[in-house]
Image 1 (tube, one colour):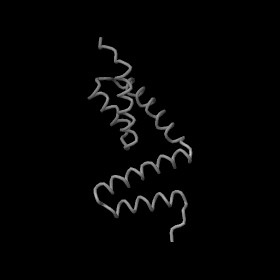
Image 2 (cartoon, helix red, strand yellow; image 1 turned 90 degrees about the vertical axis):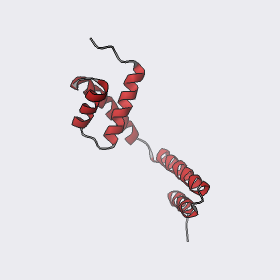
Image 3 (cartoon, one colour; image 1 turned 90 degrees about the horizontal axis):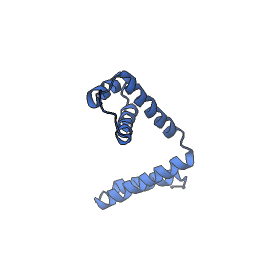
Length: 107
């Protein structure tokens, strides 16, 4: 009998399956991945898929203000990274996108 996976291993596997699902992999591809990488059978793979889909659903339920804050934060990071590399055009584009998200008037 195979050894039981730890909670941490299971969480890592579910996160891996989550990434496969959001990147468009089919159920068959995910099951194959689980069999090859974790040595589990179809039933356990389906459990991982179900739990990963719950995470996908939670991500989809994000409200507009939360999404807006997250998007602004990412754009601020892009702006800072671009400025650090001396890519002023990309930094300016990130600022413009931030202003558009905040609905500031740009003339």
